[in-house]
Length: 358
Image 1 (cartoon, rainbow, N blue to C red):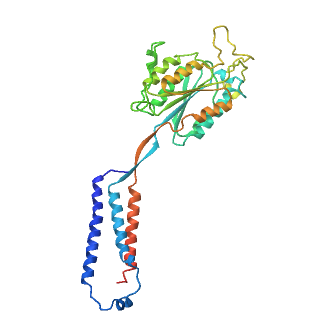
Image 2: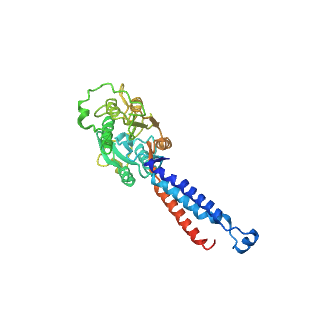
Image 3: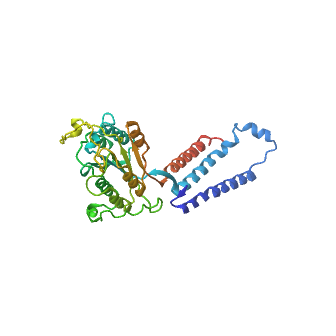
């Protein structure tokens, strides 16, 4: 326990002073008392009374004074509380490959359900935003603690052509910058990034380490548009933002089948066996696990992989809920004042109750 005004604790010294004065007064009374030749006779004319009752009002008053003296110093206790500005940005791949049926009924439906469960299980005060990406990335829902809005946006996701993983990372950083003044927006800075430049090493946790906000990026493919993910890593490292990556789907080619709602206005031609890829070409239906692992490692996050619905649910369940807690003092003056006031009232009541006795 700590105190905002520790010098006020000097008021507690009034307790032993009052106690000493009370004891001195009691001693003087005994000296001035009339001496009776028969103590038994004196006791016979006095009403029965417990000795402790005589001192109880004073004891209650002294306890009240001590409690109120502590309250005057404004006591505080330190407790772990979630950082209020913590935000989680959920970046979801909505490329056409998410229509792959190697995960029943398709990757898109399973990812939507897992993301929905993740949002609904978060503490109510946690802010979460949604970035969706296919050929480009867009902020679908800015960071908010209105989780119903997030669930509605997740339910309404539609697919598009292409996979812009790097752009999704930058868009997620900008979303965090909107609610955390310690994170600088990326803006047009990415345009000045030298292609293939080596990213800076991730900072060590601790003082000057990571910000409390994180990015959770789920994809089932490889980057095909925009800035490469490893080039985007430098911006996340500079801003001390961790990126948790999730590669989703199996390594087996499969057919594509999305619902009309998931397709939205984009109606491509689907055929069975899409995704085999030609010589030297990466299959659009297979996640680039090597790159995703590097993204997570360099930013201080964790790389996960899931090939079916149970695995994906397990991954989401293992993601940070309260990203960071901090030691924060909480003033507890009010309880001390309340207890002190009750003790004072009890002292007055006890004094009135037994004042009729000598």
